[in-house]
Length: 398
Ligand code: C2E
Ligand code: CA
Ligand code: CA
Image (cartoon, rainbow, N blue to C red; front, top):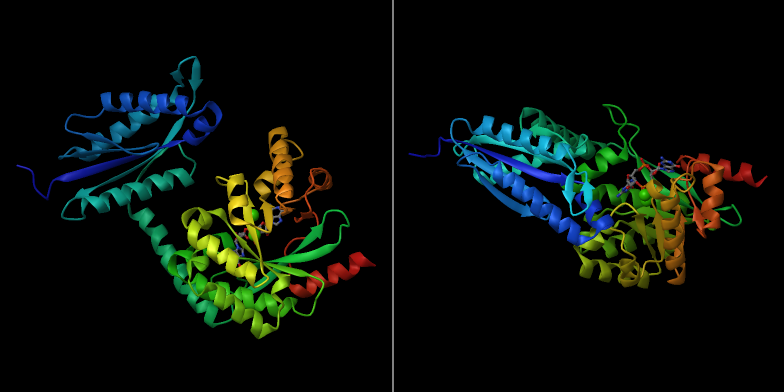
């Protein structure tokens, strides 16, 4: 007789690199590959186990009983072994991997929904720690969660105790090589536990709602800092979460009014994540901002789905080609071609094109040749406090 005290295991499998297969070989090959893999998984599900396809390239196997965990592990091991050799689809031999997470417990400890969630968290951990591996959900992953909670508390404390600063990175006109603007980047130098990079705390701020306060701080401080330098534009990063706030446009207007900063000197950078999730709200927010005279840039172009289609649909003023793509122009022909193509289309649509992550002279020249309007990167300057930026500018002009 089965009961709530039975152990259950969930194995969550997410293929690595499946999107590339679709992109490179086309959907028919992708579909055929899924069918082959699904068949192999099904043939190797342990007795009493159940296999389900969860989404495009995700599978889950659930199993109960005293040996549930061992059987789940063995199955995960089989999957990795199986994917170790290339899979033959028609005349092609395709290499593909998988990131796997396993969670186990009794239904007394947690619901099956919770078990799936844990397996998914464990799978995600496999993904971000190098893929092609199995992670068992355990206290270690809970620690990650706890660390996030701690950082949340620290951000709250930091906002109240003036621990954050805003630094700036020059944006350079590709033709004249003069500084035409700056991008504001948040810094946390006075965190009592030691400085932390924005990549590490912005996501925590986003998931906890603290990004509203932090974002407002960055915007206000940046407007104050830049207000006197009337020939420079200011570009500020906005998280998708901020954009979701129905009051967002009003808050921006308020910050501008307080610092007497003209809207026409401000540009907001948004990533496509938000635009993809909420096309309707995104479109109206972008239009409202543009009606105030504020420019809107699509940030990190080249890192996600990056469809040229959004560029048209959302009327961005600017697109920023991400450093992970722009930085490849000096040694990767494909990347170089992608950049040139993007620039041509964006330019034809009347948008300004900025390339990020320029680290050497060769990249600078190639990006300029490709038609980028503005350039940004360590080759010109690291992000620095406003005084340092202005000193650098004066020095370069002499
Ligand atoms: P991002 O918007 O893509 O910002 C550019 C990042 O690239 C900055 O990192 C900058 O220091 C770095 N960078 C600039 N030039 C180069 C280069 O030549 N080579 C390399 N390798 N890197 C370069 P940072 O300041 O650590 O910020 C990381 C990310 O954190 C930003 O990426 C942005 O997504 C986010 N972020 C930073 N400040 C804010 C903020 O105030 N609000 C929000 N929402 N996000 C922010
Ligand atoms: Ca940015
Ligand atoms: Ca970027």
